[in-house]
Image (cartoon, rainbow, N blue to C red; front, side, top):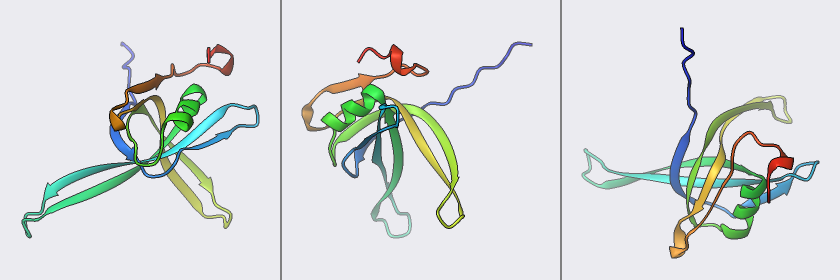
Length: 132
């Protein structure tokens, strides 16, 4: 019996809701957090008015992508994101269980302001293998 492969890929275009948050791990690896909004418009059947629903996404960028985001992206910028959906659980300071969904980005393209800038990262690499 052949092993069935699976895929975990998320693709979306949205706008940054805040400035990129760049920080470094203890070993000096850059990591950047983004808050990206996607919106959907629809016509309400009852009121015949247009409505908009916004979803917020937590995006995590590592190494070169993190530095790219910190240097080139800003609040309100339109971005194209590709990545892997991951879930994380922890306990807060009061001992309450918490969960979140995050997109670990492998591609981040800046779309706004007519500028064309992009960066990509190959997943499953170590810091020593990254040329930048």
